Image (cartoon, rainbow over all chains, first blue to last red; front, side, top):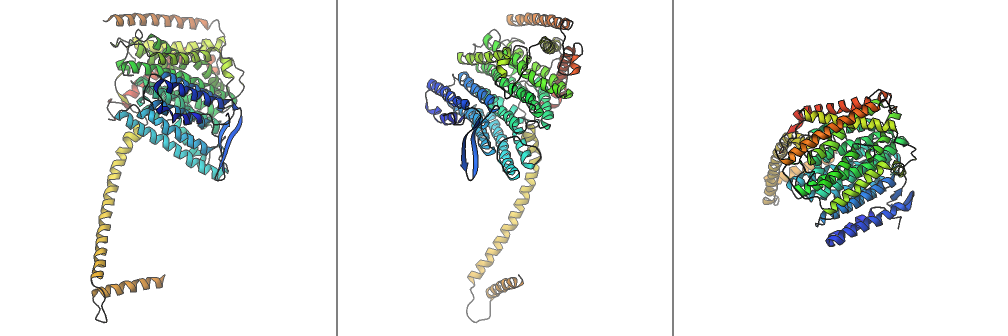
Length: 560
Length: 78
């Protein structure tokens, strides 16, 4: 039983989900997740391999790196089931279960082909979470999302084939960046990890998904990419600088974004940057930091998306311009949102603090001063947009006139569980660190660290207060902020349309010429048929034409 | 002004005062706690205070500039 790839049972079970009645369906999904998680107890090693066309595919590979991702992916999948319990339509539950299963199976892939299969499966299953929204805008976003995700898979497959030729192995293990194959794999991972300029799909697609869908999406795809980088490219120096850029850029966009779920998508991008930096450093301490951060991040980011989803469920929007003053109507949602906000802002006693501290220590230990300063500034930025902007504009700010009911009970329960994890990881770091890939003898709670962190976050909050009080803070405006998806939504059509028009004209012209040629040839052939060569008479025009043709063929054969 | 808006204003005032109070406490704590960071620069007195505050201001200022360049109408892509 434990040899079966974790996640596979979830994918199989998803086939039954649409046929089950509402409550039974949710229980069935939870049972499927529980059964799937049993495979996590298999321990380190290769537990399931198959031979296809002379290639050994490793379907279930487990080690210290797969375990934390396996655990947190199962946990996130279960939380999503509780959060979406009220939803009677089966589409999100079916897609969500298969999507989570595919991500979990991908984490346990021991070779690049198996990884590719599950990599693409995450794309195909997750797109239904956007399509389920049912609006034209969501459908368009879903198609763009799918194109980008499938492109990532195609690059991965091409890279895997080249890598197989170069290295003679398909094994998914540490790779050295240099050959075309490894670069293609690197870019494929980079698309899913939302590298700068490859990130447009994330902020474009996630906020267009359904309420439950966005929570599900936030947990798996990008963290699968983080896992893939940690396994394949740990210690690749480029990642340090790419990651540093990832932490910085989204912060500025988040400040001016009006859709709060899109703000969270930017902050998700920024958090991935911290993990990418740590993977780029690649030491045991840094990899521990990346994994710890991924683990904690999945939960607090899901919590934040859940709280925004709960608000959206009640009032129908997540735009800051339309929200405000909901603290009285939705007090529990507000509390859970603030727990998520304090976690992502790395307040002491919350999960972000214990996880991010390990990364910062690793960066400091390597003497990467500029990177350290960028990450520190980005931490202040996270506090600004996720820590303050999200709860402030939703629950406080001004009276929006909205008086909704509190979130449904199932949503509250899911948010409460996530909050317990956020605080639990924050107050029990030593227990939390035990799940990390390498031994970690580190205590984040000393007076120096606590005071330093409080100084950073409190003065970042004071800066926000100062800007708000004196009217310098940019007002929320219903708008679209251009992101890298602009390149393929506006720029490429702008450049491509005239080129295509010219090429079309040329093709039409060539077509006309070819058709006229064909008409002439047909006319000649018809003429020959209508004027057959008859007896020993003076040759007519048809006979001359036929003779010329024969002579030409003979001449050609002769000279060749 | 609605009741809720008055409430929110009051809460905002209290929260601001509380933050200022916390800020003062944290600056005073520098004299009692031997604070040290992961890099040498961080060991400078009240470094996180200055860095946290100025980084936040910088981010918002850049955000304002960025908005002028990148902001479009809500239906820009429609």
